[in-house]
Image (cartoon, rainbow, N blue to C red; front, side, top):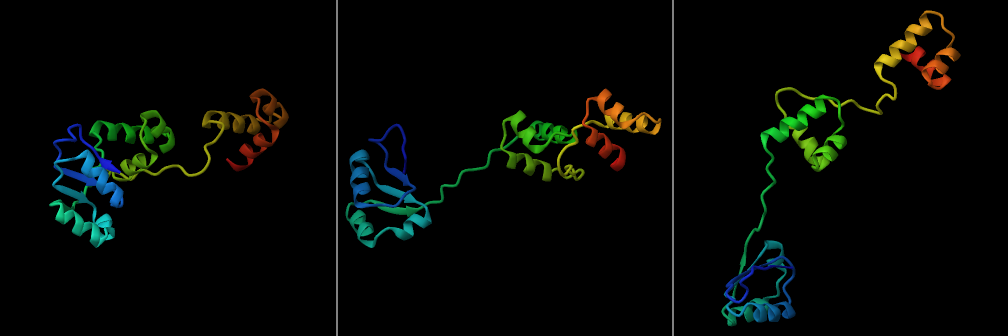
Amino acid sequence: MLDKDKNKKEEETVHISSQLSSKMIVNLMDEYPNLKRITCPPSIYKRISKKYLEALEELEIEVEIKHNWTSRIKYSNEKKEEVIKLIKDGQTPTEVAKYLNLPVKTIYYMKNSYDKEKIKLKRGKKNKYNDATRTRIKNLAKSGVPVKKIAKEENIPLRTVYHIIKNN
């Protein structure tokens, strides 16, 4: 893999990110006639044959180690605040990631790096029925309305009504 620029003919330095071979050396010489220096990461440099290094030295081409790290993507404070607000409003990191078109891992990173207060995510599956419906079911049950009638009125399975009354 080569990192190529538009002005190949005038280029004197090329960075490679794959194993150097005799075929690649010939291709580099053809594509970059003014080539003076080849840079590569340390892991690639260690694997270059001594014969190739000597041959390149005879051709007056230096081979150097260069770390070609890229920087992380920076997100604005507004974006971070929006992520925190959405999480506080009860959205899951996956929902926030889809909404803002960001990686889920980034959402978790932003959530965890928010120092003002630790935000706890609710664990487990979300309740299918909201709190208002649950309290209405409990109140109807306490007032003596039969469970079958509650299930029919609320359009909720009978077993679920029993579960809401018993556990909540």
